[in-house]
View 1 (cartoon, rainbow, N blue to C red):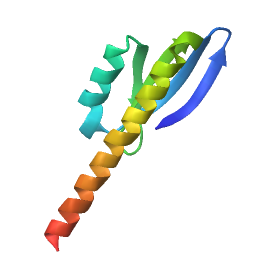
View 2: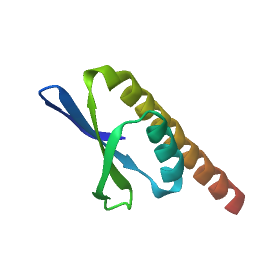
View 3: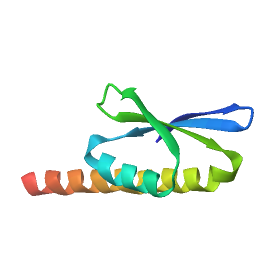
Length: 88
């Protein structure tokens, strides 16, 4: 999920915390949209912090990427719940 969005003149920045389980899918989606990005670190939960720099014309692509990340994260949660149910 995005941590923060920062506006600087025309360019904007947003950070996404991406769980390692879905990093490949997220990066594929991000590169398809040709968004300028960099990996800036890891969170305490071992999520990869990805910073994306974009301009106003790319806002829709960033919003789409945010929605995709939410769907991918909910898929992880569903898998974890299924695994917990199987363990019982």
